[in-house]
Length: 368
Image 1 (cartoon, rainbow, N blue to C red):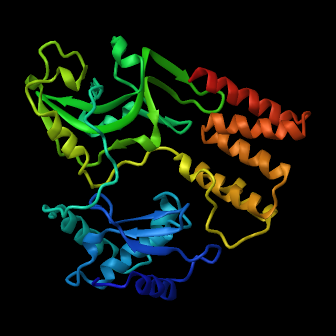
Image 2: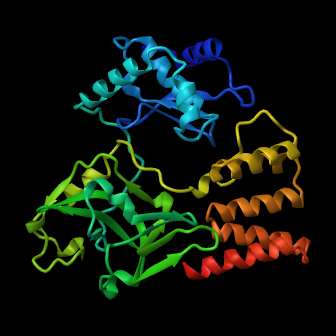
């Protein structure tokens, strides 16, 4: 390794001050080909990841320290808001380093092979499905994340064949531009609906979304870099937006699977993953009442849940449990929120707030 990341993080803390309310994060090089961001701070793991492409002695140490500083700030600030930018700009030569990073990463062409854990099998029931009416650059508009799922709008109601409705499917997602279909994602155990559904999340929020397919967030991948395209005339002549891999004869489906199962660049991370639900916040504070105050002030609902989990570790009481249930509801985790409210009602059957929360959560579970 050209640089010792732990040593550089220590230098940042010494020069620019520590995040006093937080535990020192761990830091590592990313183990995949990070291209779309130079680093990432994982709040629930309290880890900073830095792109391995910066592990080069030819790169100025101050550039890497700037990336570390940027990610260290994310321990306090979830978003790139004005307060974050003001703090970031205390680092010298910010614009110079940002320009260098943009040019450096845009010139990376040859990617080293990396181990990829995902495996989408070339099964007979694999489906190719198009998200219609979208430009490639904004295909994420078709995806809504809630309740640990991605709800996917196909752009219009399409007739789904019975063979695709009977069981969950492996799906390869496509977007069409001109005469090309681009592979923009894939999922395991996708559930199709006979009709396109229209869901309103009032009174929780004003969001309204459509969907005709859904899948567990952790079984789904959406690419940041679109590297595989298929000419439209290679699909069956009667292709209307959805077909099975067994219907395809004019191109090698195995080549598509090979691409998917070796794709090791950045993926869009959308929504709350179930595996992170009971993680805790990297805060030094241990008094539950102070942690609840911090959770109430937190504008990021995911972070509010993790802070509340820390409060439960400190004092597992009904007050904290009720706050956690409400935080889950705000994060649109309806099934988990319903279960949490029901557990409270087993102990406090007359708790009106829990009754209202359980009823609201159950209503949304029924809608979805």
